[in-house]
Image: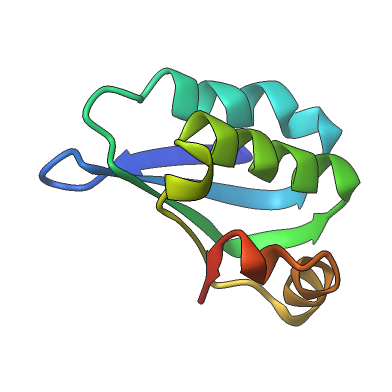
Length: 101
């Protein structure tokens, strides 16, 4: 399964782990991951430790998550990116919109 979710013990943080390619083929499962787990979630972590590729549709999906989570007040961290993924996020100026670790 390319998208997995896990909630923190207190239920306030939702971690979405993306495995393999993050592209349009994962659109619905990525959206389901946060829309069906929304109650009491205050922050989101997008774990890309096993993400091998992302494209412009993935960038759009991250922006949709940001809008869903509250826009400018959203608490979203993208973490564990490999060099190529990190480069794409940097070129796209996503460090202005997300915490990237």
